Structures are given as structure tokens and as C-alpha cells.
Length: 408
Ligand code: 7TS
Image 1 (cartoon, helix red, strand yellow):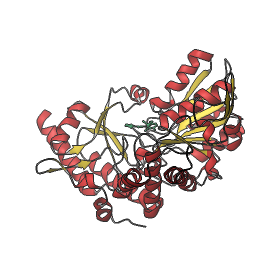
Image 2: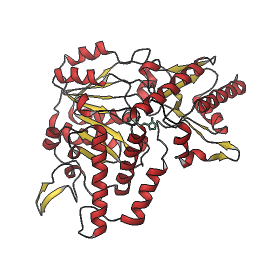
Image 3: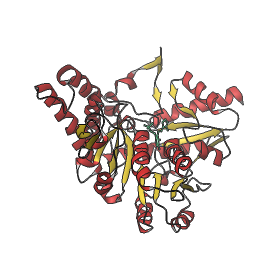
Image 4: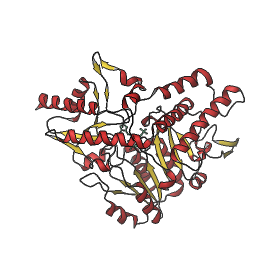
């Protein structure tokens, strides 16, 4: 299964631009956010030109159209995840809000002082801080599955932690720094055996390979549209129906209620119970177009392309003296290459690469504890998506040689 990358690139207007005269953009920061194809831009443009109206609140034609578009997108997303019902797909602002929804609603209704939550050392801050807040508030106990030297989770320690009867296991499907793809199905199976509920951070998995919530048997899955060629400002929390039904509302206000009296309210049915206020409607429409776009190309083909680019990038980066790439070998890894260079700080590397139009990110990438684990303050990170090319990897490598000349 192959994809036609030049055809794909032609669909992304931003990839045609030069960052300065004569310097074309080499966008290697898709892990932070992905670029958007014409189909997504046009769907949102069309919505505002033709159908814009608030949803669920009017009988006029535009309100019916916008409501239908908003709900069609939800059905597409449910299909994309192989969810049993669109009612299990709750729109949020992003992965961060989805995880916070679980922390504020499910966890505060369920967890007591001393209850154990298992996380891992490779979590993004958005799957750490909500639990640290709850630890301070409730006295829950946090334990962390360690990351091994080669960037994998230590599953032996995971099994030992599971023996302590955790209430929740929350972990990332794919690390945004190491690129590690964790064995989610097996980890979820073991967590369920131990009686725990599972929350999977799919911010980096759902955009890059097929994620089937029923095959995984996952209880909650969080992800963002903007990392999967969709717009910013919208994400999803998928949940098992019985859990979502039992959870109290998160935010209160319009749309999330069935009836309201001066001193009481009855919450709405799923998914509206968790969608208070006017949502990101145009963004939902764009999200649906993004799902159509990715489905049209095929998630298997996208994953295969990214794997080929990642293999090539690792090969080229590792031949540069002084470069150390973090994380496992390509067989366990998605399209991320975070590295250090012995002679220059990651921010200097990123700045010099930018002179040649190469956009990479430098810093701790919202995974500061993981960098502490490896005793480094920061890394430079290149990341790849369906529109990335080997030629772009070569430009990255040429740029790193320039940095070496400059500092070396
Ligand atoms: N979880 C993971 C694994 C992520 O990579 C990110 C974003 C998030 C959660 C949060 O997603 P958000 O849409 O709510 O912000 N990761 C990155 C990154 O690596 N660089 O910028 C954002």
C-alpha cells in the first residue's frame, strides 16, 4: 500500500509557501499540529458561507442544516473509531479537555483517598497535571510505569503495580517525544483483569494509525482534531456507554440539560450532557472533513508511509557524529525523532534549521518528567506525517551539519 505524496502535498496550500523569499517551508512539526488540506479548509469556508447558525436551537432551515452537519461529523468520527454509537463521541476542545473531563467527572465521582491511579513516565503534561491536582485535592495515590533506557514501558513493573488493585490506568498510546507505540490492547486487557478503568491518550495515535475502540476494549479515549489535519479548538472524548451514562455533568449551562428550574435541573442524554454551551460548530464540520480525507487515503497507507520516512530519518540522523536520537528503534515507533546534538543547545539547533525553512520544535515538548528521566533539559524534535518526504529529511540532516559547522 503506497500513497502518492506529491498529490497529497498539492492538497495542502501551506506546504507550497516559502517562509522567506526562495526558502520553501519544510514542515517537520506535525506532532505539535498537522497542516490542513483544502477539503478541510473548504468545508469550514462553505459552512460559514452557506449554513452558519447555532445548533439544536432553531427550526429554521439554517439551524437544521448546521445541526445536521454537526451531527454528521460526529457519526463520521464514530465510524472512524469503530465506536458502537455516535452518542459515545463527546466533542471537547482538545485532548487536554477530554482528559480533564474524565478527571473532573468520572474520577471525582469515583476515587477516594488512597485509591491508586497508574500513569507512565512518558506522559504529556495533560495526562499528568489533572491527576496531580486530584492527588492534592483527594489524596489519591499516583504510580508510574517506568520508561526503559531504550524508550519502552517496563511492563514487568506495570504487572507489579496492577497487583495493587488500581482504580484507573491512564497512559499514552504513542509518546510525543520518543515516538514509542505502547502495546495498548495488552495493557488494557491486563488493567481490566486487575479491575481498573482505562483511559488512553490517543493524541498521537488516532491521527497516525487505525485505532479501533471496540477491538482495544478501551474505556475512555482522548484525542484532538488539529493533529489529524482538522481544525484547532475541537477534540473528542470517546467513552463506554455505561460509564458515560453514570458520570455527572462536567460543565453546566445550555444544551447539557433536559429541563431547568430555579433550584434544579435534569441533565440531557448522551452526548449532550457533556456539551454545555455553543460548541465549535464550524470546527466539527472541518473535523468531519478531516476524517473523510484521512479515510479516503487510508490509515494503513498513512502508517506505512510514516514508517518508511521514520526508518529513513533514523538511519540518516544516526550517521551524524554527536547526534543521539531518543526512543526505540523504528519497529516500535511512530513518526517522531527527538534528538540531542553534543555541540549545540536544542533551541540553537531549531533556530539555525529555521534559517533554511526547516520547522522543528525544541524544548521538553510538555513531557518534562521524561526529559528529567533521561537527564536532559530539552531535545530537538522532527516529526512526520502523510505529506512528509525523504527530501525533507535530507534538508533536516543538511541543516544539522550546518549547526555542527557553526558550533563545532
Ligand atoms: N497528549 C499527547 C501525547 C500529546 O502529544 C499532546 C500534544 C497532548 C496530549 C495535548 O493535546 P492538546 O491538543 O490538548 O494540546 N502534544 C504536543 C506536542 O508534542 N507539541 O505540541 C503539542
